[in-house]
Length: 365
Image 1 (cartoon, rainbow, N blue to C red):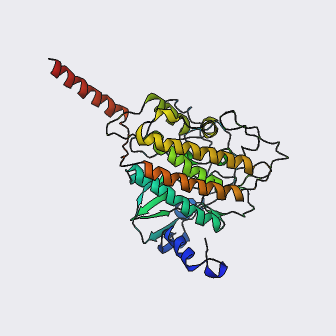
Image 2: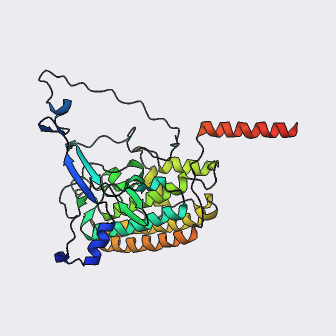
Image 3: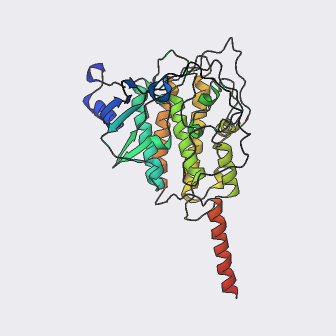
């Protein structure tokens, strides 16, 4: 991303942009012998032997229907199964092994355990995205691990998949962390041009015929949607008391919204239908109410932008960005001193319940 004073940016704007991203001290490609290490040359830089045979691996078993909550709060960044066929034709982009040394040593959003601080990070991430979008770029991989904090500054990292907004290439490859990926990126098509009003329909809108459908391209709303999924994940994954168990409704909603795989209509239904705000209490309830309003704004932005195809996002992105900034500012003020705790994993939960039962037995005796 380039933002120079001679391109219309002021010194203050350039400095603000620098503060939103990491400072590269050194970067270089990794060499093995005389060759650059990359995925086009396997076996440490050597080509496949001429007599090498290729075998088709058997399909994976059907993924378990049981929702497995990560004990450390890190959702998987890979897909374990899919109800959708692979994209055809499959295009492989080869990668070069590169090492980068950054100046800053930061902590990720995963490591921040005060609700107020996490919400402030999301608010400042919207400001950073605004700078990125205004410069004509989209990030395409917004996730908790890519939102970093050093002191009072929030930085967006991992620009590996960043792309020019005016790129004419169809974005045929899904990029991003599965649980925070925009629904359209997951589906690889525009979804909202026939969507009903929010809450009135939970069916996936039908696509245009292939001959009428413009090539799908990622856009700035997808970055904002990913950030909204992070906010929803915070609400549905964490609890606000140490040793607390999420309610059955909270666990069920988490399983639908964050399956960790490409899983059909569940995520889109959640995006269209609104949050079940009543399952929360305390500060979580206040924040969830604003998250629900942000979802309404986002859904309307998609519908407005996709009234014509190819979509026109410029005005909708500006309005949605402003709304997200205001909403997150309000949530910061409402969050108080609430802490965030991982829910007890099932084994520890059973152990804690057993200890409580033993204590009650001793007391009764």
